Length: 155
Figure 1: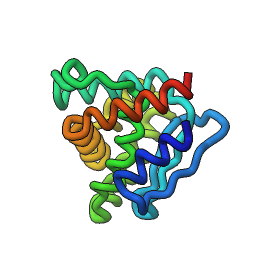
Figure 2 (figure 1 turned 45 degrees about the horizontal axis):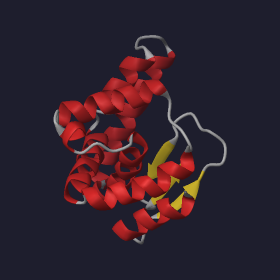
Figure 3 (figure 1 turned 90 degrees about the horizontal axis):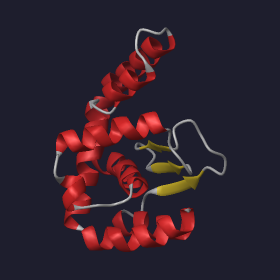
Figure 4 (figure 1 turned 135 degrees about the vertical axis):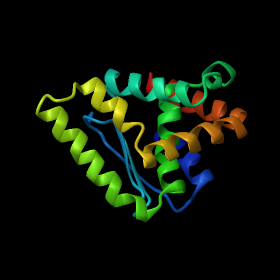
């Protein structure tokens, strides 16, 4: 599975480094786009998955019907999308909004569900998601081949 994930990411951008998290992490997948490093965990939480895929449907309500693909593949490509679309001038606003959302959730002003709904709509998150959707649309057969290699090993 790790080799297939590395192969997919290197095919897209061989400058991206990948680190695998052996233990499940709270967020599952993450990215440091300035360093071009993606952290791959083995799972995400159901709340995060729901918020993310509700937003994918909001951006393109026919995407998942026309291009059925495993959520884990879309999530990996979303992280690649961070590296491909990152703009440093957006970082300050992103960090401020992320901290604000986390604080509001920690202090019970937002539920975890609402925090996730707002988070996926932040500009840098939106760009990464749009990038992943477009990549899958333009490279669907390739994505399905990697899905077969990655998901069979994951299950």
